[in-house]
Structures are given as C-alpha cells and as structure tokens.
Length: 368
Image 1 (spheres, helix red, strand yellow):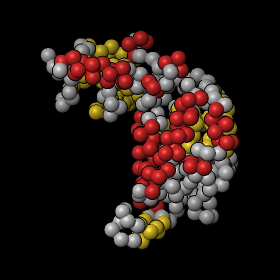
Image 2: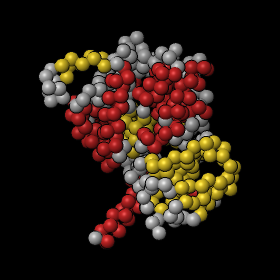
Image 3: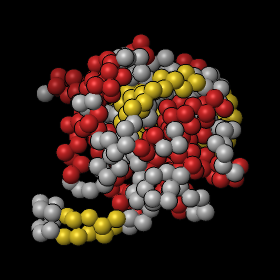
Image 4: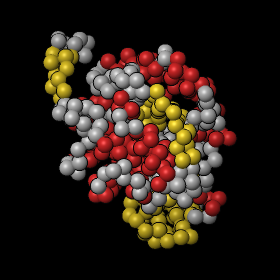
C-alpha cells in the first residue's frame, strides 16, 4: 500500500513539474498557426488581423487556413485539404472552430466530439511541438429558440434562450472538449460577453446578428494574440481601423478575461505534455534568484522574500491537478507570509504575477 501511494505521488509530481511558464514580453516570438474553421474565421480575415496585432508587438505570426462557409469539424476531419495542411507539420497550434451552433445545444455537441478527437490525434502525430487550440465562439446577438427533444427533454419542447444563456452553453461545451483533450482554448465568446456588459456601445455583430463586425473580429484577434503569444494585449498598438477608444477598450477586455486568467483557458497548463525539447520558455524562480522561500518544505507557514520590489503583484497557488487552491492579491514590498490553512500536504506550484511578468516556483507542504 505504501509503495502504491509513493508511485502515485511520483506520477503527480512528474505531471506537474512544468505546469507553469515565464512570460518574456520583451522577446520577439514567431508562431506558426493553422486555422481550421468556417466563416467566423474567414470574415474580416481573422488570421491576418492577429498577424497585424503581432507585428505591432514585434512578433511574427505565420499562418495558413481552411475556412469553407458553414463547415463542421466533422467535415474538416475528412477533408483532404485540412488533413494535408495539418500533416505539413511544424505548427505551434492548430486552431479548431466548429460550426457556430454545433456546441450551442445540450447534448448534440457530444456527437461532434469524435471529430475533434480525430483532428487532435492527427495534429499530435505530425506536430511534436504543437498543441490544439479551440476557438470558443459566441451566442447569437438576441439569443435563439430551439426544439429540445428526448432524451434531453421529456417531450418535444421549444426553448427560448437569451444571448447570455446561449453563450454560456457554447463556452461550457467547448471547455469540456478542450479539457478532455488537454487542449488550449481561445475564449473569444467570453471576451465578447465582457465587452457587451462593459462597453455596450461597441457593436460586435454584423447585421445578420451572427457573424462578427470589424470590432468583433478585432476582439477575437486580441484574444487569439494573447493566447498564442501569452503577452499583455493592452500593449498592442494595431487598431485595425477602429477608433482609439474602442480599440483600447477591446484590448482591455482581452486582458481582463484572458491575460489575467491564462490558466483558466488551459494556457500553460499542459505544456509539460509537449516534447521536453519544445519547452524552451519554462524557468524556475529559484534559478534566477527572484524569490527565496524559507522554510521549504514547511508545515504551517513559510516566508517568500524577493530581491526586487513588487507592486500590486498576485500570488497564485496551484496543485498538481492544475486547480487553483489559493490566491493572494495586491502584494507590495519584498516579503510575503504564506499560511498553510486548509491545504493538504504535497507539492504545489506558485505563480507570482506583476504586470506583464510571470515567475514560477515549487512549494512543498509536509505534515511534520
């Protein structure tokens, strides 16, 4: 029994060793991305808009796409054009965007999962350093009405949903698939939702109340830039023809929803599953002497001492299963006292975030 528990603990340790990453915004990056979707990706040339945002930050996006109108992932999974583009290899990300209503209803989206699984499997076979990223879209501008049939409903029932209800279902279903595949997610729908609530004068929808306007695609581009390059979108200087105010508000929405919560969208969570030779950006706080933790391991409390002065930093603690278990905000100064409280013994990962910098380290809690 003891040996089994020890082995299980080692598996958890190995799983979590490279969960976090350090964000080096000053360093120019080049990303190779393949977009497989439909008109939501094609309209206003989303990949090119992401490239424009990247260029303004000194980065480079090399991309290709296949985006026939109305396409489902099921069609991409048998489309020779899509499959051959994946098999070219050397993609950092393959972005998958399903038909706009595929994940909008419970439970039909389950029927789309085999296609997502197939595309993800092919991506991993031909791209050793690549990751799958799901493009989380949005609900219709004024919601929708659909027929709920058995077994989802006891009898055939017409159900009317608001935009927010529809949008929440789409996000929930996309994240279920992304989590199942340990894939990344670009939460464009969540960014749109934040903009509708906080900057309601910005029109995200085209006249059909489904496709994106120029501002809607710009919001998607800022979201994708953040998830692909893992940098602060408020620093983007590319406005894509929008007013300076609207563009700045959209970039701020992407920061609040995406950049400030990258881990929630699986960004960095599964980097440890990529070939170790691909993980060139992971560093440890202990190696660059940004922080000292003493004692470590510890039983009830420990002290984190930095050699630099932090202002309004945030400390996030994550367990080996990728779950956030504790967060301390508004850290200023050079010393932080960390109390165990109700945390179990074991290995944890720290992420100390200040503006556009992220530092990581490990923490061990013992029972004696």
